[in-house]
Image (tube, rainbow, N blue to C red; front, side, top):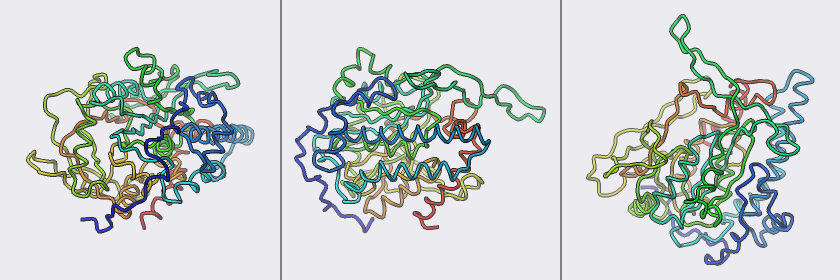
Length: 449
């Protein structure tokens, strides 16, 4: 058992859990990038949020938007320099990020996170917040539809989506935009039988938020403020760890916090099933459910069919990576699965970043790190160790009530590391790898090696 477990946190946020005034001002879900600019009274909302006088989700979104706007400007200046001089270093790019994160994000962290209190009172109405990071994902709309359509209580479901898309040339007034590109697509074999790949021009990405919110069946959820969204230019994506930091900040006091990818299918009544499974754990309420869900290939509109969910697997193995890019970071993996007759969920050592489900108090004890840009490998071992040492026990769900589309390189879908350096005249994964090798030192320092 986890000897650090205690349930005495003061996680009320100093407010009334029935007070929903912090949700009154919705975040417009369209248009991309400039949607947050349409929130009225921005200066007042930001000041009230930073001061702690009356924080709102809209105020948080405006602060994040200010950071992203300034990061966009900073990157444009660095791109001009790179074009003029023919060189740009990873340290210049990283230092520009750190400066802006310290200016815009750190005050928000200091007001709430460092005081060990939630920004909003945690409601006790069994509501669920889904943190959803999406990178140029054609299945985003299906994922949202599956989540809401398959939920037993869709009215209690809230989503914080970070949409990192290529919006094409001239996406909005004052922005020139970029020519969108595919991922590395397999186009044949070389003389040694290895895959030959090619990156080609592509149309602007589908906006899954727009598709979902324009659907007559689902528009109500967007109009009700149940879908909170921030957009980023894809060539300014800072990787999944940073996108999940942004998404976590769109939490609005919901009872449960779930983190997922944006290419999932959902089983009928998944929300109630995971909630009940969490309550069945021995350490509840300081418990986390997590797994690598089973994969699917044939797309089914976000719906996981079947009369009986398949037995779950346990994340209980790990190894040091042999990849030069990953610098011997610890990679986790599955071990033995459930047999089907277990009375309780089994405790495991690791959290998967692509899916976990916990009480929202998790955000108080294990807040997301605002200084982890360009990190792909390493977030899971760091998240697992931080959770454990803050008194949270991790469990594998006994059944799979979601499925995940795993995406090997042969699918040719865009990856964030392929576009990081494109803005600076360094296309391909090389520049991203340089940045990751620097940032992975932070992971190792926190983990302890």
